[in-house]
Length: 343
Image (cartoon, rainbow, N blue to C red):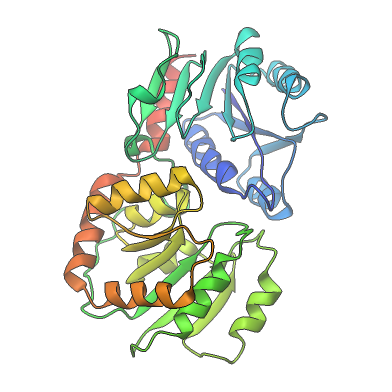
């Protein structure tokens, strides 16, 4: 069984699309299948990670979007004998979808923010909190919707902590910070400045810079010998760090579902309107704290939010419990099973 993924990674678009596709690729491998990633753009850390997972990669000899790219994907699928194509990226449009589906291939399409256009994919996946059928009014009768956190895609390194049971500490001792694989806007630097302003005692923070983060040297200078409570690491073991953290400060995206699965209370930025809507919904249910749009945000405001939640063990305990109830970690396996049954 071969499954072809069409997605990209770069400093601009980040690595989240590839990383959640990797979660599904791992589930596919666990079911005895073979995964192939077709990418027009990638980064060296992403390529290395896919190779370490035993995933085949191929470089598209076409622009990342458009009809030529879709035809390349069709050719690769036929050469590899893949029955299914998974497309994940905001730069793919209806023409791209139509081209692939018209070739006779089965198609799973990531559609995080709904589709107000005709859509012909066999499966439409929106793993986000609050996803509803009304977001896809023009789908075909045969199109199956995979909606909500039941289908959240988590990689093996997070699922390894499925048996985690933790007690919420009355005081925050460990903080973990992660702004994704690339962090083009350098939100990591903003949070470091905020951490330096915190007046509470007894805490330490591990700041994780993703492998594709272009600001790493700048961040090193920012933390060097300035505050011993703050440690900077590159491409660290985020699941292990989060499993011992009393609080996580993150950018919304796939990391959000990972932290909820690990019962880690979350403060999160929303970089775009979709992320902010999701965070607002989660906050209204007491599941996360939404820091808001990071553009123009002052470190003092972030520091105040960290201190407030740190001093609220009851709220942190509730957040930890609700997060784990929402995300059960079975999303990738569920989707892989559906794809297999539909071959």
